Image (cartoon, rainbow, N blue to C red; front, side):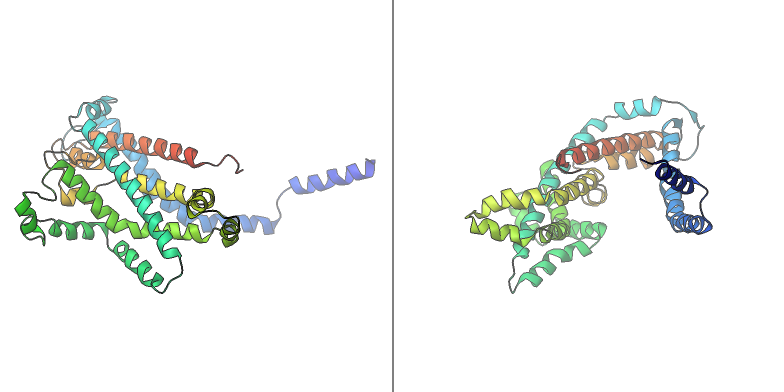
Amino acid sequence: MSVSMMSGRAGRSRRRSGPASPARRGQAVKGWLYVSPTAVFVAVLFVVPLLLVVRMSLSRWPLLTGDQGFNAPDNYTKVLDNRFFADSVVFTVKYTVLATVLLIALGLGLALLVQESSRWKGLLRASFLIPSALGLASASLLFYVLYSPIAGPAADLMANFGWTFLGSPNAALFSTVFLIVWRFAGFYMLLMLVGLQGIPSELYEAARIDGASRWQTFRRITLPLLRPTLALTTIMCVTGSLLAFEQFYILTKGGPDNSTITVVQLIYIMAFQGQNDLGVAAALSVIALIALVVINAVQLRAFHNPDEK
């Protein structure tokens, strides 16, 4: 390489590493101005509350009156010693597994059903998606009336068999899962449908020419190419199920016999009922946050495709 070429490259390198031009500085300032509202929003509504919760979890923090002060790790010890803690974790995991499997399977099944072109395709999509427009609290109140042993439409029929929708732990669990599946199946169908429509139709045509069956096409083409959508829907479903609160608070109030208390319900009970101790509730909130981060990391690792860079 000649000396002139080396000197020319060195000169260009010095120009690139030199002070930024006024135009570039102006673009950087505009970029920070565009980002600043979101940064302030995240800082005020996420970072600051998170730091406050961590501080509360390490301190005595009664709900109404009492002395505040550093007492770590007493709050975390009280969480582990709580008589409902282990049961709430087991129940939340059981509910999460059941709801996730049903929602993902039904969402994918409905998406495959409405993907095919037919005269009823639009009607079916709208029918499955309509329940998603209803708020979860409103849907829970609706099902609370439907499940009522007094005013519910199936009250007399259930009374003849001596069975109620919310009268036993298993009945309460399955009745609540039915509500969640009814409410969210259409939403997950929509997500799955978007993923299915992103798969090139040429792959299916080539598979049909090669004589592949529907099951082989589904297993060899649809599932592998649907991996990103499955990862997204699974993470959303697992996270939402682990944070379940409204449906159980409205339908079961944690009953019968405290058998349907979720982790988030236990946080509410610790903070505003019984103990009235925000410090212990904050400690359980931190434990739940760490568990969610770990679970989501494991899910991302499980769905990661090693062939993708």
